Length: 104
Image (cartoon, rainbow, N blue to C red; front, side, top):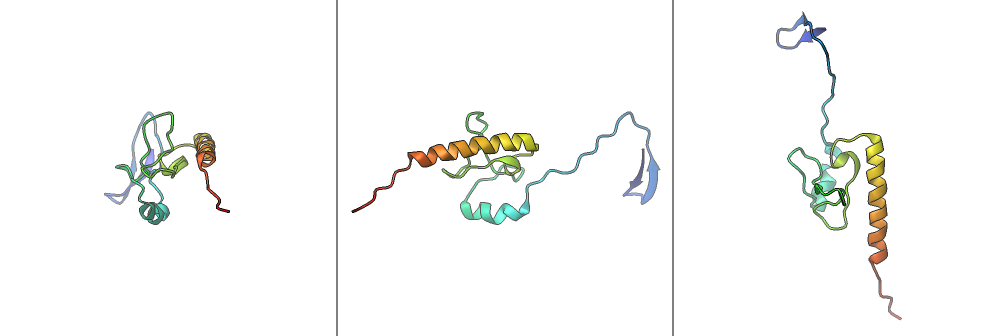
């Protein structure tokens, strides 16, 4: 492998059996103002804290606010879509349990 050595500022060569390339996966800073305003807890890595429970993996520390997709942990698109579908179904269930009294 030929690469730029950032410390020595020179081109370097290294013989290896395998190279794994991976970019950093960090939470989006553009959501931080909304997350703070809503009082949602973050985990040690800056993602929205969700329970380890496989039953409701999209609940947050604030009742009624759900998190799915990359805001809760790094995940690929198919997993995000499945989680979003489950969260939408759960939200619909929550909404049907809500009743409003209409005064005459």
